[in-house]
Image (cartoon, rainbow, N blue to C red; front, side, top):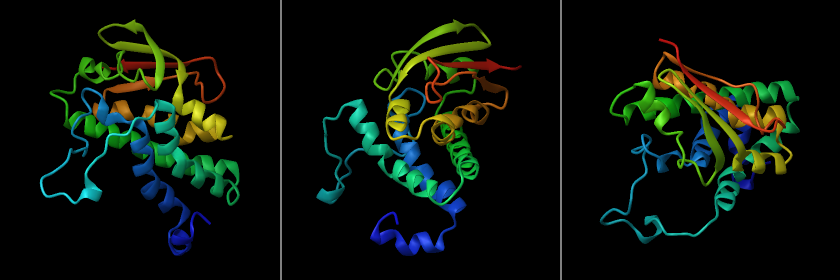
Length: 212
């Protein structure tokens, strides 16, 4: 059981629907993408006139790790429950479906809120100091058609691995979205990667390519 309030929902919503419709909203929030250039306007708003006091955003001081732990809490709980219901290949398959959908949403919304869909506009969002509170990363290749990053620390990988959900499960839940993001922004863009911290490597080696 997830919670007592969710019992009837869990009984009526299939596992695939739970992962591909309910979880993406949670996982998308984990990324904090609205805080970066080119990803503004993703539905985040400030206080509005006439809002009830319960609905007015409050300033809360949290570290990046604390914020990520809070955001990932529901996702981690759901995955842990489903681990007891599904074998790992099926769980990974469903999590891949979920994160692929998130990647397409992120890329599409970035495109909608960008002045154009050029390669330089796309990669601008990954340039330091963006994501500096959640990643330690540096640009290792930067040309007209290739942009490569090496990530040596990732708070998402830390949180998922500390919950015992690293490896293929963590990659499927969190990292897999990265492959679908570029093409949703522009069909000519893709990402290549051979290593991830989530899967126990020393770096994540993201390489974004304009194939035109």
